[in-house]
Length: 634
Image (cartoon, rainbow, N blue to C red; front, side, top):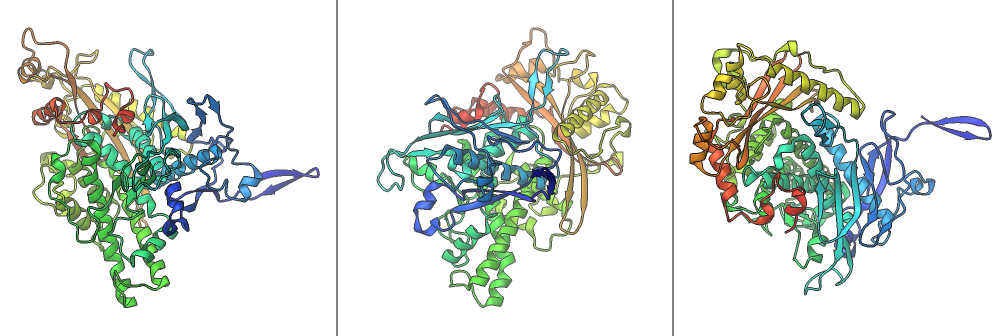
């Protein structure tokens, strides 16, 4: 309830359910074309702040985000947008405008918050940003809570935009359009990344993914940087389909066909056009017509991150389109129509509703899959297995064969997971610990760790709870136990001195002379299924480091502790696991492992790091202070 004083009388009014902001559905260029101008001005409705959240203030600045509009190129601070101004509240914020900095502020805030809310609905918990680290306390790095991600709408004059892990910020550039025949952008006109719906969603997704899996940007394989880019593209593309009016307009023009290149299937058209390149920056469909088919296995030869990631995007989007076509086939039959023929407006409305629903479901599947990924070295095939497992956990029945459609789309592109004998959904699910080692029987987490699993509502309290739980799991793993050999098999890491001494002497030791482990995170999730399922989980991520060398002979000598072996390393090789725990009985549902003693994977990482065919922009890693700025320079 909000309170207002009028004539000395205190009055109370009900708090609105939603706060509304006007935005571009795509970008300013879409408003200059007759086929898209009618629906390019959209409204984003965001939940009004909860009592325990920081109220929205000028900037805008709220619980998650702070817009700071300083333009270094001109040396100007632009006046901040005041979202509480009654004039703006009465008209859903400022109308779309390329020339008003305050609308740029409104646009980046609204689209970023919409992306955050979509993630929270799927993850079953609040979004937390990756922490800062204090290197000076307690002899080891200490995480520091980061409440707000900063957004800079006019950070620099350059055709780039990127998420900065160092600054905990997203920086949007602006630049003048190039003169090129066939370009729709006015030569010399200013183009702002902050006005591209796709770019904002893409960069915020990078930040959210980094807060969930901070090791995913490391140089471990060609799939690692490609996965970051592909996942951000998938989120941006699927969010197109949450705008039902836009989807309906496209379906009316295409006569019910979604499997065609269009505004809905492409990303950042104005940004790409202004750089002198035709079409969208990246596409979700394989070709320009329905008959286009993917080239099986083409992704394996790609080394540039965006080109490689495009195959993952196409696979996910293909799965979405197949499911939509399956769900809408009966509507077309009942209406006596078919794709490619003129359709009744009521049928268009129903098809748009189905497309929106399927896109939301596919987005949730992709986001939930993040909790079923290993904590290091992400691979495309593992993402497929994570999607299948995450969906099967929440929706055991699959009457519309969503999982079959997803697996088939990956198979058509030759994106196959290692170690599976079949692409059937049941075979793609991660195995349970009992499958890993049947002799141990039912696998349970140690209840003596006493994790705090009580629901929290304030983001800082959620973060603090996660840190306490992380330290408790860390302490449990640091104490030697007779069960360590069993846990080593399950987790794929070295826990005992015996294991360390057995040709793994490149694993750093802690003060107790045992192999060092890092409990990366302990996250709690509560998810609701379509039939009322209540799925509660504890996600525990453990990582371990191993010194690695470009010379295999040096690696072998250092691993066995040979006299005169090098004490430093050329790079770090990491292993670890993600454990999915059911808090009702402390059973471990899944252990997703990347073994620290996997020499085959080590050789693959070595080959990738030495591969001269990898473009410089895709050689991202810890040695780069701003990996995404470098990665986006294409």
